[in-house]
Figure 1 (cartoon, one colour):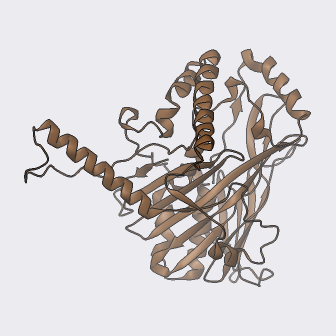
Figure 2 (figure 1 turned 90 degrees about the vertical axis):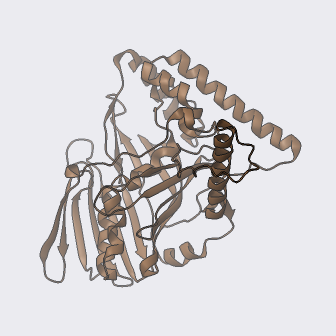
Figure 3 (figure 1 turned 60 degrees about the vertical axis):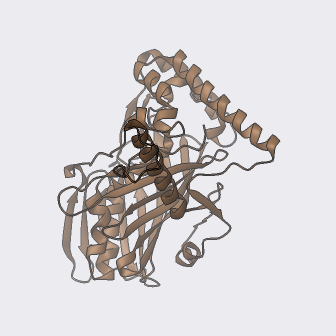
Length: 401
């Protein structure tokens, strides 16, 4: 689950902020089509948001170590409540192994990001798509369309995971923080469903970031096996409903986040997000609103020209590592009967293309080997073999502005 963080509007931007809020309050439609003031831009691309899923790789792979499908359902909930671009998380020294990530913008309108996270050592894979849609109704609400599929290959088990809506509090004070609301689900192919209900702090009083979750066998919601409640951003308890005893106390704040390993910007490709947006990010850190607008506009105009040329040439924008599917039968089967769940993201049903990704890695190796041969004076025609390039880590894949 995402880390809850309050953001304060700087005093020099308060006037522009309230002007923006007035325009938002009268706007009808998806707020993502509005141009936000430069000072509201984040130095982190939305394509990087899937990194939050695996900031604790040991929790990500933990379910595969259990032989009990019931316990695995509980371990998936524990991971999901804590966690919410090409790169990797290296082995933490505890046998977790290497966890890797690729995410890519697959749709501009609506904006949508597809992602794939995997750990080969433990046979764990998470792939999905998220397409946020925001609107204003007394405050800013963000619906997160799409879903994720978590696969534990050692157990031949798959989970569908949905995301709850977000609303932003503190608009009038200028101290912004997210709150989760509504309901989300986790359902496994082994016959267990987790229903998670979120409660916000409220206008006057209350505890922020609270949730209550139950795990039950499919069709037996009235007799749950486990119940968890507390704060998704802090402490929560898990109770075994059959024995009536607490079996787990968990404090999210005690976990140490593991940083993502990403290769330096100067070694990244132009299409990789941190390289493509490096001057915008630099301007955000410098609080230079004029440079932010200039650099952001330059990238967006370049992307528009690329899309225009594709239309003229009769070409379709080709995504690098994901392919669009008409249906996802696995997700349809797992989602059947879940209340209010719509699998359509608005940005398509995108699935990971591992063969294409491996082909890109091989091509990168060949290019690096050729460069090595050129450095050593080789023609590439002799039998001297240069050392293979180790698998590299890249930044976020970005399909456009």
